[in-house]
Length: 209
Image 1 (cartoon, rainbow, N blue to C red):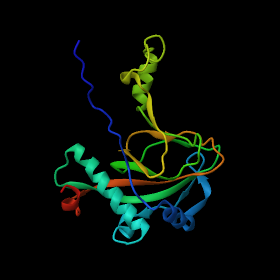
Image 2: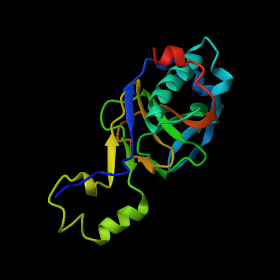
Image 3: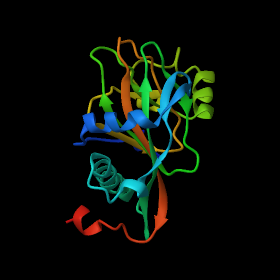
Image 4: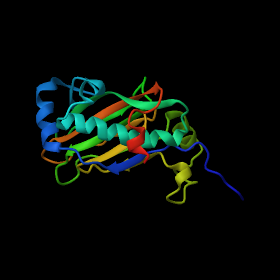
């Protein structure tokens, strides 16, 4: 029987080349003292516009991630719009802690770049099916008697292991979480949100030459 996989969830991932040591050093002055989101320490939000034209490591990070995010955004077939980094923030997840399931309301794309990943099981990013679909598949028995193995139709989540200088990008409305850091050091990353902006992407000529 013919089958079509309709309405897929895109997840983009690619290596980047940011100065991880400089970004980690930069983040220290902005970290909040209290834990957030199920066990992580996070910085205050920093705007992309504030650093986009800077020649420092943070400016290079913003420009590089924006370029790659706009390559991904083209997969939606936008007309007279582009994706602009609204804000970014640093995240440090201590040993034994995790990040709870959440989404990013108000954004179109969200993502992460890993800056420090301890050796071992440092916790993976899990992009999940929406709760309603998961409930239906569980109710139909598709995760028990009806599932004969690895089946993309019934996947509940897909995980991406952290790698230094790797970027993972996904729709901001997609539920996602990060599993427990089972190492003896903090896992450090920088996350970001993108919003849709009218006009032509300012670095289009450089991006699609």
